[in-house]
Image: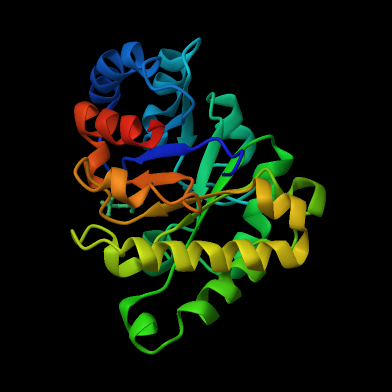
Length: 253
Ligand code: PGA
């Protein structure tokens, strides 16, 4: 058994206005106390971050962003820095989501700067890694995870490594309704933990590694059952408060 506190995060992507965020949290926050021993996180779009953070103050629910820029200030039109996220009340930020890698040219080089910049600002990075279907079919899953973990965490000091959360998200399982099998998820997550242990064994033991990709209320228990899987990053099924609550409750069991 691990001592790691499970974590379940709602990745709302390009969904929810401020009033929709409030509506969700009005339902969810009063019930969050019923989910014992699980860290609960919602990741609204940037425009709703401060609203969500205010609504979650004094509750166990944490608020995280979906992306950030690595520089603190500068001529980077359209970007938001770690300090700005902290100012908006964020606890953490997703980094390296596959949609950002695939649709917005996010590189491992940028992530190598973003992860330590987030930590430096006091944000918990939720770093997403995972292979495409072609890479899995080509037997390259291990190699892809190795490259992403090594590159994206290259500039994180060993003392800070334990503060990172990783989400293993096979790209072929995101938004497709197809999940990894429990065996596939466990195998990938154990590989990621082994890669981290090569840096520092005790930090690796403390890092939460989540599974993400078509987690739903009806498969959440099974997917979070293995001791190796420390929770879930949930997209589509996190948009309805009662569905997300059911997934959070599954993590508590
Ligand atoms: P999904 O998305 O749950 O809709 O598959 C997961 C994610 O993109 O983090």
